[in-house]
Length: 477
Ligand code: AMP
Image 1 (cartoon, rainbow, N blue to C red):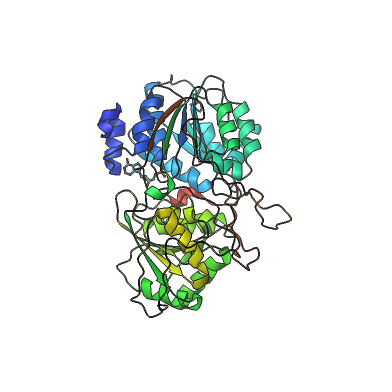
Image 2 (image 1 turned 45 degrees about the horizontal axis):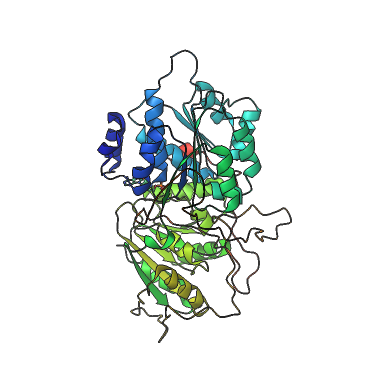
C-alpha cells in the first residue's frame, strides 16, 4: 500500500513525499480511512508507530476541505491534547510538515513559559491547536481559547496523561467541547481507568491497535558488554572515540547517574549534555535541539525525559545501566533503527544487573550477543534466557503507561500507581475491533523504569508536568 491508496489530496501527498515517506505505517493504513469517514477512533499505539501522522494527515485534509468563510479570525477547529511539552512541540511540527502546502494554521501552547506569544498567536486565529492540559485550561479560563467551533478532538497518550495526574484537567476541557465532534483517543495501554475515560469521550469508535512490545527489536543490532560497574565510564569513552558513531543516546536509570556520565565524558574531552526532570525546560530544549540538529553528538537521558525524543537518524543507543523493567529496554532501543534506518544498541551489564538482562532476553525471546572484545570484559559472564530472578530482587510492577505521577510536595518520590496495565483485549471495548498488527514501527510499550535499584534511595526521575520554560521557536529544525 502507498499513500496514494488512501484518498489523500495532492498537497498532502506532496508534503509526505518531501518528508521522504513512501509507505504508510500500519496504524496509518488502518486509521486514516476511518478518520476520513469521520469516525471516532480508539488507537492503541504509542510514539514510534507513526501515530502522529495517522491523525494529523486526515485532520489536515478534512479541515482543508471544509473551508470557512474569510470573515473574522479563524476559530479553533481541531484540538490535540498531549501530556508533555516535548510531545506537543513534536506534534505541532508534524502538522506544520504534513500541512506545508495547505493554508491552515497550527499553534502549540504549553506551560512554564510566558503566555504572551501564545495569546498573540491565538488572537491572530488558528485552525489547529496543540496543547498540554494545564496551560490550555488556564488560557480557556482567561477567555483566550474558545472551543465553540471545534470539529475534531484528539486525546494523545491518554494512559500517560492519567498517570501524570491530569485527569481532572482533561475532564474539565472535555466538558467544554461541543457534543457534535469527531474524537480520537490514543493510548499505549488500556488499563480500566483509561478505558473508562475513552468511553466518556468516544462515540461508536473504530478501534485500531499496533505494536505488541517484543516485536520490533529485530532491526536493531544488539550487543551486551559484561563488565564491572567501575569500568562503565571507561568503556563508554572508548566507544565514543569511534567517530563512525554519529549520534548516541545514552540511557541512565537516574538523574544523578545522567549528570555523572556527562561529567565523566567531559573530563575525557567528549562533549555531552543530559536531559532529565531536574533540568530547566530551557536546558532540556537546548540539549534536545542540538541533538536533533546534529550539533550535539552525545545525549544522556533518563527514560521519562527521553520519551518523545524523535530523532530519525539516531545511530546508536547505549544502555549505560540496564533497565529493571524489560519493556523499557525495548522502548529504549526502539529509539534507534527508526524510519528504516539501521540501529545499534549496546548494553553495559554489571553483575547485579544480570537478572534484569535475563528478563529482557525472555521478553524479546533471544539471547543478546555478548561483546567480549574489549579491555574490561568480565570472564565467563553470560546470562541464559531461562533462569529466574533472585528472590531478593522483586521486580516492582511498572506504573501504567510508563509515566509517573508528579511527586507530592512531601517529595518521597514513591509512585503510588503500581498496577500493571492490562493488555488491551481485542474482545472488550466498544466499536469495531481491527486486526492486531505485529509489524508496526519501532515504538513500544514504555513502563516506569525509574524504580529504585537495590539499595538506592530517592534519586528518581519524574515527569515535570507542564511547568518549566523554553521558547519552542528557538528549537525548530
Ligand atoms: P510517531 O509515532 O508519530 O512519533 O512517529 C515516529 C517517527 O516515524 C517520526 O519520526 C515520523 O516522522 C516517522 N514516520 C511517521 N510515518 C512515517 C512513514 N509513513 N514513513 C516513514 N516515516 C514515518
